[in-house]
Image 1: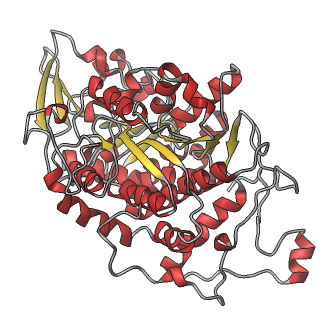
Image 2: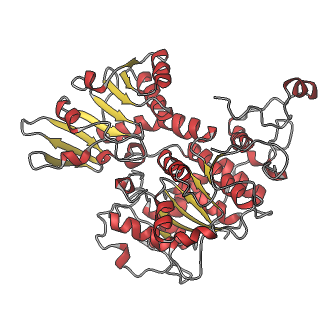
Image 3: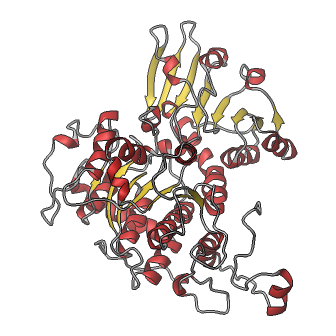
Length: 509
């Protein structure tokens, strides 16, 4: 894996003037939140993972409102364009309100939009995206548009889309192909409509999970001749990129956003620390105090889940394959076990490993009555849900995204979101956290698009440390936080530039 080394020459990352970290004694124009935002934009192998879930319980619409497939509808926005496919374009006004609310909690993206839109660092960029289409994603898309990019977008999960937000984007002129409750055939059709269009060819990819990258690689490999780079934000997608790189099949440079500090710590740890409780509470109305919970995996997501459940009074066990993460769990006060050792006694099973078949049919058979089973990882492969679709077991839908799976002897388990991503299938995540991730994605796109030839080769790169620090600095004014500035003597003593980067690439936060 290549790393940005910060040395002079073609490999160096140039910090534009609008991207300088501002200290407390400098004017911070981005500290003021916008009071009114314009309503118009400024202009995996194919696998089970394609059905991962990432949606909000706050949607105005339910997939049952209209059984007609959006693919069979003829819709146009107010400008007469029909280059989109959403559930109902008439819901655009509701979606616009949600986007405006999200903007208030995404200070960094709004600051980036204000600072850089004059320079238009993405002018000429044609970005095809496959991410979760929520109000927060809409703010990212409209920011990319404000910075000069043209975008076409699909959802990376079949349950990801807020229909009213997709409608608002389509009304604003974004070619969006997504709706909540897509079939798997719809999923790939939407991706193809984004990519296969006459007179328009992407030169940048923004992916979440790797399905878009795989589709282009499989169906339209010649497109990579004009694509300047890929930005990927998920563990699953990054794993696929490294596999391509190892096999010598990665055709373009790729930026691994998932392993950036701001993504790992904030989106994975702090976000899941809050959203795990929200998802469980909304679906089950349960009380956490005294409940026995096993969390499979103690990466950043697992750490967040464990911390939240422990704080609520739950008895938390951890399973882990990595001895370093395992030792961290022990030092944090959690008992490290094998799943087989506690499966009969726990009340809740949570997976967050990124692996497959973590919870097997054997585990499911041995669970106690009313055990809750859910997944906080990106992929829906962690729980062997397919093994439950057998004649002897009865499925009973209790409420949206909640199923009872009933054994012949009357025992039942509570399966959430059919084993797909819990927090955004059954609840929401904090907008502020998504602001951090979205800003990181935008900066990665800017860097890859504007990088001179030769800076990045056909490999997977980490986000430059300076960008991570810049993303963090944009969010500090929300807390009225004031950074301390090094004196010249201190900077010389530490061997640092006064404006960063402040830590070497190998530093572990």
